[in-house]
Structures are given as C-alpha cells and as structure tokens.
Length: 299
Image 1 (cartoon, rainbow, N blue to C red):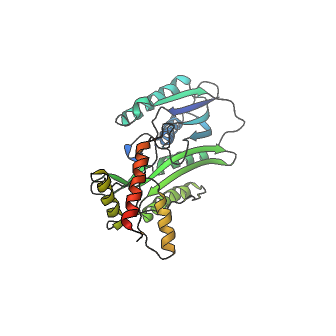
Image 2 (cartoon, one colour):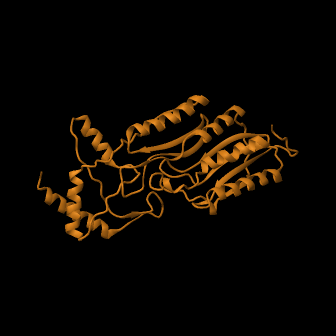
Image 3 (tube, rainbow, N blue to C red):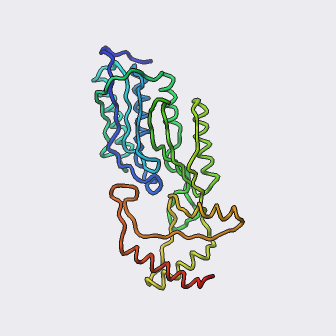
C-alpha cells in the first residue's frame, strides 16, 4: 500500500546516470548496467512506498547503443528526505550488482522538474513497469560453434525509452546469428506487449549470417594472410550486424548458396565519439584483398 506524504504535491525528476554504455552487440556480454531497466526497478520500488504519478520517461540514445542514462518525471507528495533515502538505497544496491562492470560511476538523482498539465494513469505506469521488468535484455544464448572463441549468439538490447502525445515508446534491438532464435526473442517481446495491451511493430530486420564450418573462401583468406604477413590469421565471429547476412539472403532467394567472408581494418570505440581506425591496417586489408583475388584467379 502507498504511504501518503505530508508535503505538497510537486514535479520531480528521478535520474539514472554514470553508466558506461557501449555497442549493443560488441559489448553486450560485458554485463554493463542498463539505465532503462534500473530506472524501472527504481520506479517500481518507489511506487510501492509513495503516492506517485508518472508524467514521462526517456532513456537511451540509439537502438545499437547500451542505454547509459534514463530519467522519469513524476508528480508526488512523498517527503523529500524519504524519497532521497529510497534512491540512496537503490543506488547502493545497483552499485553492488554492477561492481565488476560499470557500477562505480552509477548515480541516482532527484531534481525539481517543470510543471506539467497532465499525468499518466496508474494503469499506464503499471504497464510500463511490467514491460521494463519482463522484456529480455542482455545475452540470451552463446555461440558454441566457435570453439576457440567466446562469442554471443543471441541478445536483446532494451534500448530507448521515449514519451510523446501518443504515449510511451520502448525500442529494442534484437540480434542473433540464428534466424529462428531471433524470431523467438521477438515472440517474447510480443508476449509482453500482448499482456499489457501495447502495440508492437517490427522493422529493420537484419538477416542472420550463420557460421559455415566448411567455408573454402575462409581457407583462401587464411592462406593469403599467411603468405603476406608470415603468421596465421585469427578467425573470429562478432556479435554485430554485417552486410553478409543481407547479401546471403538475397542470393538464396535467387537459388544460389554463396560463400562469404567479412574482413576489415582495426577499429576501436565503434559507435562512440572515440571511434578510431588504424591507417596501417587499412593498407594491410587492401594488400590482403589483392592477394586473395590473385589466388582465386577469377574462379
């Protein structure tokens, strides 16, 4: 049951910040905090203790980025000291849960917010909290085909929260190298949407590109790499979208089973303001491509 506060009702913002974020494919296995999920847990706990009404939520920056900052504007008469104490409790809880990843910088804040003409219904708040609790986030399955590498096979990023005149929007980015498992993630999210009466749309599908254990083209690349650089190439899979899946799907529609290899220069800090590319690796990539084409001999 809610505990009525003794103060006047006011508008405040509860914020979650200080997380590291990262690429929703390349960094999903690092178990970094998801600010949208943590905001949902915080709001659920506060709603149990205080009389609060939701005005809006926002969180995350893009579909392919792990959300690092989220905030909710609420209308409440909860005593400020009690509300701050509740946030301090959950900040400590989340820091402990994330102590091995990015919990050190985590901060839960309480600030005054501009007044709003409307607040959302209690039912809408409960639906949001249900969605933020049940929608899957993080690694869903590991790829066991890559024997010499720890590789994520399937994942979902509970990516972006937003509020407008139409309501609350939750955007997710689902990934899998196995098409049927990506469909299952979609079905899980659909089950949550159906349960709370939400509308679900699906767009921007990126076809799965499954591992080919007998790739002859991969062997050609390995041989060319050894010739050029005098060492064995390290073949790895990555948990990120690659155009090979799109091309492979189109060729299969035409009745052709085409072999693909993805390669490129050394990049760090992908999808961040610190993204960098090694110029020398671009040159080596070009040399490798020419050697492979020479070895293929037009076949």
